[in-house]
Image 1 (tube, rainbow, N blue to C red):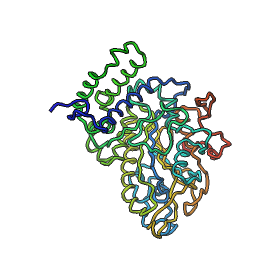
Image 2 (cartoon, helix red, strand yellow):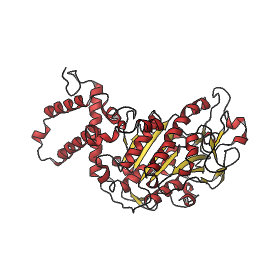
Image 3 (cartoon, helix red, strand yellow):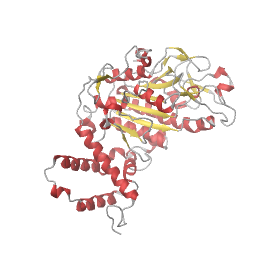
Image 4 (cartoon, one colour):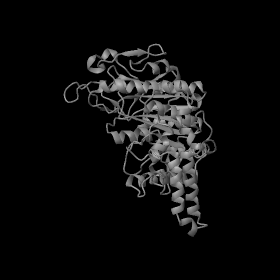
Length: 445
């Protein structure tokens, strides 16, 4: 049975049109990347890339990287602790791989911002700025793309400089005032599937079907015959060719995890998060400067401990193996790995109905993992009190952490970002601002 642009049917369905629209969107995305001009410069840094592991919903710091076994059952619940490679430092018992690899990263136990709203806290942690109506600031990923996208272009070729695995958050506009050309490309799909980015963009169609569809589209397209010499249309046509190459050509092979050894894929974990971590390592090798892995499910108001027994083993295998793999390949010294959510969870467990052992939003104090790219391993920055309810010493605000990453990337935290209305905005908050009271993380840099 022959196929046409939309498969065996002669009439396109709404889904077919949507899928082709996504292909066109990818072409336009690449066109925007090619057209982008960099009005800013940076210097070489210790780090060349960032992998951000975003625990969407907010993980419980007391069950992960800041356990308090002496606080009692109303705080710890049924979970115990496990020793790490650093004497006197323990993690939650469901993180054995991370505990074994603690020499490769450090823990910040005094992250704080005091915001308990998902959208506003997500914005604050990823931009370093308190939300306001006057300026929508770009995320760290967009800023790194602005400064590092051009210098990485030769190595990564057609692959975008800012990639999200696999679904965007939808919590805020990552590009902020920098505009759509600095938004991330979200792959969609499932990294367990062959060439998963193909399915993420165009669905279940085979490569043969996609090529047949394109040939039919070219026969139906009359614009080239009447618009010869039009620079805009020629640029779009070039971008379409590049989009197809990302999906069907040599560039697309980057997204085929079947090229990795089976035993390594198993070490990462045969699940969406684990394989996303492996995919992130491949993207770093290919020169992509910023990758975000969105790992949802952490908004555990109800049945928290049941959720932890599912989520934490996946986080442990995927993230722990990522640190091991980066180290083994000589990539950890130049790759920052940053892992946290928008806030923590209430240290005291809500045992009563309807929560049945839940934890709620908690921005007063929480933890973050940071390693590689010039950050030291095996260190603990700051601390919380005996019940993980307040910062005890060394408060670290989102702007402190983001500014520290910029420094290691060779980006001056005082650099000015171009606002479309013609004025310049500092890349990080001023030192007097609330988000940066703690200062840079010099103790682990």
